[in-house]
Image 1 (cartoon, rainbow, N blue to C red):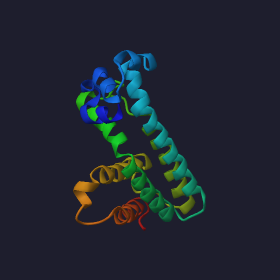
Image 2: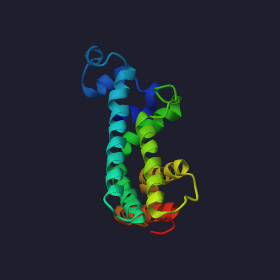
Image 3: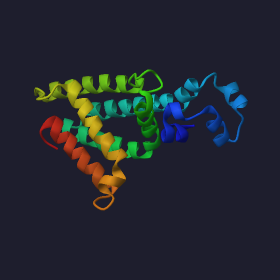
Image 4: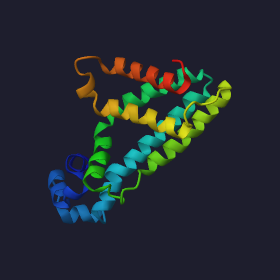
Length: 186
């Protein structure tokens, strides 16, 4: 189901096509999932929310282990990029669905993002306090811009970097870019 949702979006991925692709009947599909919306939720939204929760925990751990903030920020941006490369299909499914009809949930932002950004904002505030520094940009905005940069690089990796750099080089560059943008040094 994930592949069809990514390819066609929520509205254009029919339950008949999903069942056929899975080698099952629509009746069997509806035995396990009450609706197409529930199937989307379990195939796309829940795994994305779980992924974002795992990344939030990893970020919190990185920032609480006593590394200086730029190092922790750089390491986290690199880790997020590498994980997103492995989860491109999941992210593309959400984006494709949003492009076709504003998302299966009426255009709502995925829950995983809401929690991720709230935690990221709190982490950034704590890091600035620990450094005795004032942020130049609102931490709520900084968290979103940094995340967007990493997501864009992961999703467009083959377009942007195929002839230029490998994943490790891109991850390191992103880490330094994010750390410098957030903390003024990398």
